[in-house]
Every structure is written in structure tokens, then in C-alpha cells.
Length: 114
Length: 112
Image (tube, rainbow over all chains, first blue to last red; front, top):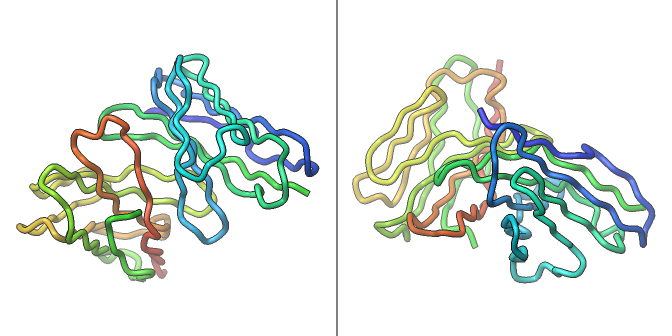
């Protein structure tokens, strides 16, 4: 089956710094990837849709200048949390659309901002 | 916002069938029902999807009522590894965005 990886799996950073999270499709090409955020004991919240070669589409209420998304190739999308603060601490998960009816999800990245 | 309603939690005994209900009373004719699950601290995993007919694959069966207002995901022989949060999601057939909007899901606990 299709495999999606994320790096790093966890990261701790100081408040005010920026953090980059990578999402890779390992054995397929993904024109569309998605970024989600999940707080403890809550459901996944879609943050943005990332399309290769074009600007990402952020969901309402998600600041595009704070959560920068780059989808420079068919196998890599990156999410950069700029000027991170403790309230940005969360589990960030990406997914890649494989076929019309299937998305494969990465294992997630746990971000802790001190 | 999510278009589905699921019980907050359920449990079943290992080896027995787990039947997870989902209410989607406002579903329209061109919307699919998808099921994903999320094991603790992992990314979600696709299980199955359907439009009108019942569906079965190696993981589960999906039973959709005739009026399509509800469905049931069946894990025929639940194992401890099936303990997870199960999400029922409704998505338009012709939605070119392919977005998935997750609701709160059902936390299934499989007991030894």
C-alpha cells in the first residue's frame, strides 16, 4: 500500500522560533496533500490543502502566513509553523490523495512549544 | 462541520463482531460514506467507503440503509488491535477538493 512519512516525528522548540515539518509520499506521486492538526482528545481539524506547483488553500480561521505550506514536488509537502507559541503545540498530520476515494495519512508529528 | 453523528464510545469482546453505527440523516444522493480509524497517536487509516450498496473488503463490511440515512461498519471478528477511534465521514461524490472533514468519531475498546 501507499506509504506517507513525516519528519520529524516529534519536535520541541522555544517560543518564537519556526518549525518545519516534512510530509513525503514514498512510493507514489501525490498532486494533492492535506495538513491536519489534532489537539489531545479531539478530532482532526483540516488546516489546508496543498497542491503541487500552486499555492495552498487554507481553511477558514487558519492563518496562511503563520502556517506556511510548500508543495514543491510530487512527493514532498512542507508545513512551517512560524513564530510558534505554546498554543501551537499539537499533533500535526499530513495525508496524500492516492486515488479518488483514498487518502493515506502520515504517522504525525508531535510539536511542543516551550 | 461534520454531517455525521456517532456514539462517543463502544466496547466489544475480542473475537466478536463490532458494529459501529453512524447517522447521516442529511446525506444527499451524491455523497459517499467513508470510514477511517485512528489508533492512538498514529495517523488515520482508510477502512472502506460506499454510496448505496453494501460493501465488504478484507478489513470490514459497510451496511448502508435503504434510505441512506444511516450506516453500520462491521468488524466481523474484532481483535485487540482494532481498539481505535472510528470516524464516519460523508463527502460529495464530485467534490474535486477531496477534503475529508472529521467529526468526533467513536472510541472502540476491544476487551480481551
